[in-house]
Structure formats: C-alpha cells, structure tokens
Image 1 (cartoon, rainbow, N blue to C red):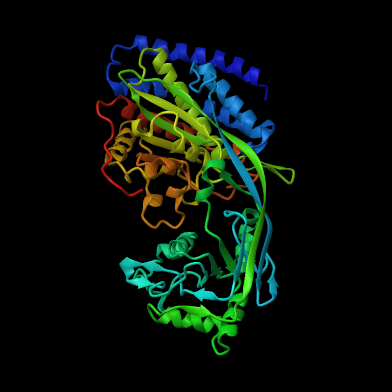
Image 2 (cartoon, rainbow, N blue to C red):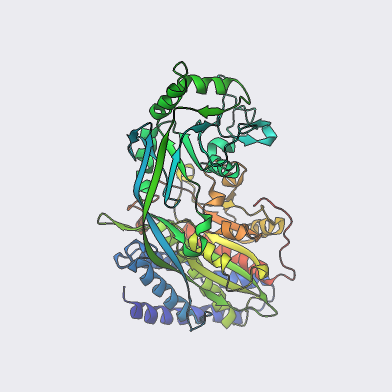
Length: 537
C-alpha cells in the first residue's frame, strides 16, 4: 500500500472527524466533567476505522510483519505516517518515531548427543529449544535427581543432599501423582506449577549449579509433532542481553532413559524407577554410572534489527508522569510461500492503539489535553520473545519511575470457543497484581461506559496457559509498573495463515478499545497517581 496515499487519505479523514467532534463539543453545555469529555472523544473510535487499519496491516505488501524483515520495516513506516497525520511530533533524537534495537537470530545448526558411543538423532530421539548458545560438554556420569522438584511449601526436595554442581542432571517428567490422582506436591487433584511451566525445572537445575538438564518426555512423538516448527525456527535474542539466555535443557525419549537406567542397574528399568519415585516422597537421587558421553551444540547466527514506534502525547500539569499503551505490530512473516497475516495477532491490538492515539489527539486539539502524558507504543519483537518491550524497559525513553501504568492490547478481534455466541466480553489479565486502584479504575469505567463482561479466568494463580507472562505488559510488571493485558482468547487460526481480517468482530473491538481509552483517560486525569499496593508480579 502506497504510504503517501495513506498519509493524504488519513490527514483528510482526521480533519473531518475532528471538525465533527469539535462541533459536538461546542454545541453542548455540560462538558465540564471528565467522564462526559471522555464519552465525547471516545466516539472517534469506530468499528469501520478499526477495520480499515487491520486490512491495511494485513495487506500482502507487509508480508506478515516479521521482525527484521522488510514487511516489518514497511509497517513501521505506515505507523509513523499515521501518527504524523494525527499531529503527534516525533520524540527521538533525529526527528524519528523509531526506537531501533539490535538482535541476532540463532538457528539450530548442529545438535548432537552421544552416550556410551551411541549417537542419538536430533528431532527424533531428543530435542531442545533454540534458546541457548554453543556448548560442548563431556561427562563420565549423569546425576539422577528424581522429578527435579524443589518445593519448600510442599516439603519436597529432590536435590536435598545431592551434589549436582558442574554435572549433567536427568529428571523425570511431570510430578509425582498417586494412583488415585492426587499430586504429592499440591495434595489435591490439581497439578502444581512443576507440571504446568515448561522451564521451571530448568531454572531449578541452573539454581542448583548443574551444567545441563536432561528431562524425559512423556511422549516425544507428540512433542515433536506439535513443536517441530518452533524447534526448527531461529531463536532471536537482544544483542545486549545474551546473559539472559536459557539454560541448556534436552528432552529425551523414554527409550533413551530406559537404556540409561538399565546400564546403571540391569534390574531397574526407567518405568520401575519412575514408579518407585511416584509412590514414595523425598527419595534420594544418585549418579547413573556407565553413562559416558558428550553433548555438543553449534548454532548459526545472523544479525537483524527491530523497531518500536513511539507516539508521545504530552500532558499538561502532570506531564512528567506517563501512561504507556502498547500492542505488538509484528507477526510471523512469510514462510513456504504463505503469508501469516496476523489479523487478530496482533493487527487488532495495533489498530486499537492507533485509534486511541487519534482520540487523545482530537481531545488535545479541542483543548482537553490529558494531565499526564500518553505514550502510544506499537512494539516489534513480541513474537520473538517480548523483545521490543524488553528493550524499551531496559532502555526507556522516559523514566520508568515516572511510568504510572501500562495498558497492553494483544488479540481482541475474535471470540474463543467459550464465547461463540457472546461477543460482549474481554479477558482481563494482571489488573490486580500490582495496583488495586488500576483494577478498580478499569471496572468502574466499564460499569460507567461500556458494560462489557470482564472475564478473569486467565488471571488466577497457576493458570495453565500462563498468559500473564506471555505478552508485552510483563516487561513493565517486572519493573513494578501496574499493567492490564486485554485479550479475547485463542482460536483455531492462532499462528496460522488463516488469521485473516475477514474473521474479526469489529464492533466488539470498538467496545473494548473504547474501554481502554476510558481507563487511560481516567488514570491520566485523576489528581493522584495510581498506588502500587500489591506484589504479585
């Protein structure tokens, strides 16, 4: 899509919309109250406008908007032209809206495991994620550490009196569960985080000083079928944050595990060991002798860049304080000749923050600038691991201590299977984890204006999908900044080329976007900044 055409068309449209709302404002006699002002300017957020933007973002020209690729660069240019047409000035030195960050992509390369002179095949006998760099390990034994669990609350520690420093560790999959289905960690039928979070055992092994972790897969064939795309895809890392890379973890088949245990003790199979550790609590692990071998990983690396786009709307008397509104504009790109359009993920959220930026600028031009400043920030690198938002919080343009909250929008265009016939909902994630006032502000504005069902099912502790940790707001939460993640659920087109703009519910998007605008308006214009009175980050 021609950017100059977008610029001309958008500028004319903005002026028309501005004049209409301005005439409404001055024909009214009662717009002194903040909620009435918000209601007026929220009207500029329209379903048809959201639809037009999403169709722009999913055009073939942008090629799926993959970070580092030409389509993402073109999208960043499109976003700049949008903000420029609203009258939002650039804030970066050199008159740019862009915050550029440097990345490198590491491809799987060569990954080998050899035990007792037998070579095992990557993506058949074992797999590992592409989240750690080159390594070469030679070992004379492997330490068996039960389930690899250390949970003080459950009085369960597989590492107790076990020295694993500088050694390769092997652990069982999942967690110990009785024949009646009771977890020995939770004491209930509910599984603990040790089964729900993939990386938790790796983090514990690293904490214990292990060199690498081998975890037995419950079903390696199913794992490979589901994860093959991710395992073969490059891992993208911020150049400045290599030390934050993952811990070397390898997932092996039960057949390999059985060979290891039989080599150690011919009378003790893998299943027998697992059954014993399942039945009895806090058994002590041991070294598996006769397990000599080596593990080697050699990656392939290329350098790329990503860009965050910053639209800064300066406030008035409280302008040094800031509300950041984010949505990632990147997606999966083009692969095997197919474009992954990413209409819902996250053309929907990107369209929403563009409309919110426009609404705030219309208000400012009408003499109703927000008291606190607003930073509208479409970020890239989300699909690579929340990297754009991480870069911003590591290298903030505006001080994090002055950042009041983050409102993050990711996938608000579809209905999930639980709401097929009810578009009037939105999932709210994280609103109460750091600030009760932020949670109350969102609920109060919903009651006053939008009356949409606020669904908190993904906000509970130990939620299996762990969505609180999977979008850009989390980088703000890690810095003690209150946040809300607005989301409408997963669907069959998630991360597929079939995530197309014709499937979005734009009227629903309008309501959700207006709710976010109302909440931002409220927080921007209140006398006191939000309190941080909780710590569940």
